[in-house]
Image 1 (cartoon, rainbow, N blue to C red):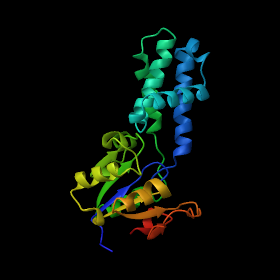
Image 2 (image 1 turned 60 degrees about the vertical axis):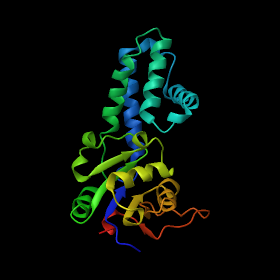
Image 3 (image 1 turned 90 degrees about the vertical axis):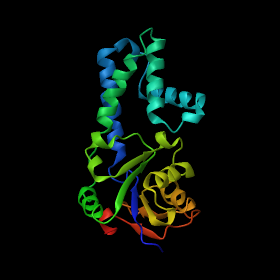
Length: 223
């Protein structure tokens, strides 16, 4: 196996727990909407807004990987339906996005990345729309490849190809690390990259998927 020159990392549920983060971000946005636009929120709640995003994704399948577009478009539709200027959707989205990037890193993350960047080139590779600058960790990475920029989400080969183009390194010299067996591990291996499964919670590997060559429970194990 080739010694990697580049390490790429998934973000959500790899560097930080995403479930509580998204609940907090949704709650902040809903509170803002109820305070500023109570007439709109008489007809909507978290469930109806999720359904609206799903309808937007069905209407624009070529952009279903772009969570920013889906959420902004759904919010704009809400405001239009209520007779408001849809530009108010940008304010609502900003409330959500600010909270979405208020991440709490897993304990092993910052120290491990600080050590790894002395030896490897580090990139983030994410299906989500987190902003590394707002998260406070942009200085740890050389670059960030998103599904939005690549036009496709993991496990699609296009997002891994975008990483290879950005790094200028052949696939066999890249090790991708992530928590999702299919999107991160299988997707990376199918694109010719090395892959490590970050299994923080002692889960069982899916029996129908080819296992990775390496499984770790913390980023410190890479070192």
